Amino acid sequence: MNTTNRSDLLSSIVLDTTQHQITDDLLALEARFRQAESEIEMLANWRNALPDLLPIRGCAQANADQVRRLIKGLAREPELVEDWIDVANALTVLVNAANLALLLLPPRSIDDAWAGRNFGFHLLRHTKRHGDGEELSLARRATSAVMSEPGGQDLPSDAAGIRDMIETMARRASALQPKPLAATPGGTPAVHPLEHAASLKAFFAKRQNLMRWYKAACQLLHNTEGFATSGLPARVVEDATEGAIILSYARLLRVALWPARDQRDVEAKLAARDLVRARTADPERLGALFEIALEQGEMVAGQSTRFINIEPAG
Image (tube, rainbow, N blue to C red; front, side, top):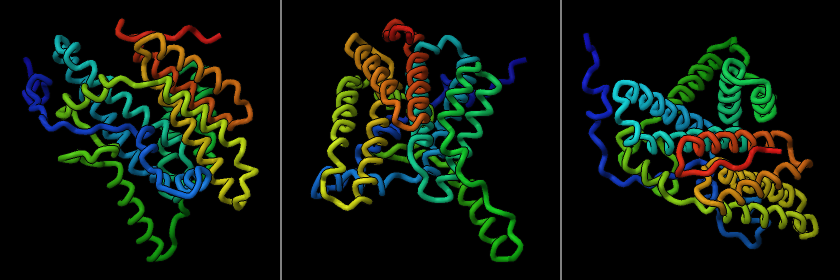
């Protein structure tokens, strides 16, 4: 007896004809710059205006739910795999970029710290169950910062404390259940259901200039070498240097995450890998994040002759 509802079938989905401007959380960081007197001041300001992590966690979780919805639909209609594969690829990039951002960006509030720990816990649990020893080692290094953040609040003992705890739980629960927007503002990461299939396909089909992102990261890392002699206040220099490291790695993570479509892309990915592995003074978690992103990009590349896998790591 077939109990499948028509509403559960991919072939019955009513597609949204609106062209949504889709942005991943790593690329969205580029749009947060504000004009300043110098590059150092601009980077310092950027570092102190990074996005909240709780909404990123919510969108990542909601888009991951759409991946699961798609897998469930394809199990029922496997003949539609070719039609939907790039929707799956687009959602995978969005989810992975958001999760990488959660581990890359520093927490600036207790909600940020909770969002990072929440994802870190789930990543470690998943890797322990399904990964090998090398993958678990990478996951532990990648989550080392978020898992070392202070734990949750102590149980309250008075009415005000109980009220604060309930409000915190409600705020976080609401943030983890974001809804798709009728129209997505350009440059803003958002939830994209399967009904956005046309927009998701267009997002994934857009060629990514991986070499440009690699070179931009290299240039920014090079520029930090002169920050200490700028004459600006030490705190500004410190924030700018941290901001430059974060932004450089956001660019390198995008290089790793997107599949290579031609030899120039392969060269960019290999160069980025060599750069990250040579930067032994950077926090170890950043190198682990890059290796995770690289493997995620390789998984997408391995599914189709449209893409090229890079050579095995030496």
